[in-house]
Length: 198
Image (cartoon, rainbow, N blue to C red):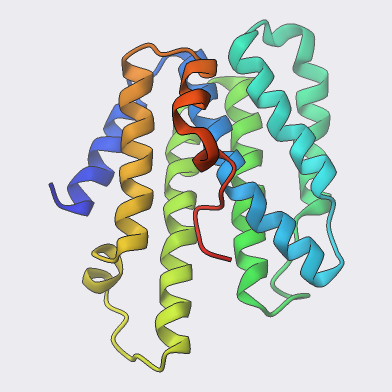
């Protein structure tokens, strides 16, 4: 199956997830982008990785306890304050700023899904995770002096195939009704790794 077909399958499959499975998808994608934000903060001495991690952990907790009502105020507070810890490309010119911004988008949309259950949030999370890899590959080719950065080349790269396959694998596990703790056990160290090679 071609990468583009797999991406379409992912986005179609996301619409079939129930609320708790949607939270698991959001949580795991956010976990994988967190190292990108953390790296940026260390490099630029800016940001608040502890706060972003608290937001991610809350989404993970909600995946196992979906009584959203008792967390709604905390969710809204965290969502509003993500903007305060999101870097701007006007202030930071490095590509690492873009990776950090993507991580913040994914966490913001994860909290939004937790609050409102809008499946469109999951598509944004998936697309943003893929976009991070897209930018990473484009930058890597540019650094090598390679002028050909066509979509065909980028979407056939090992890094992109790995990201898309990861999301598809995760989606298949969710459709199989595996609980979060089982998915975490299966993914193991992959869960804590960035989706790009920093």
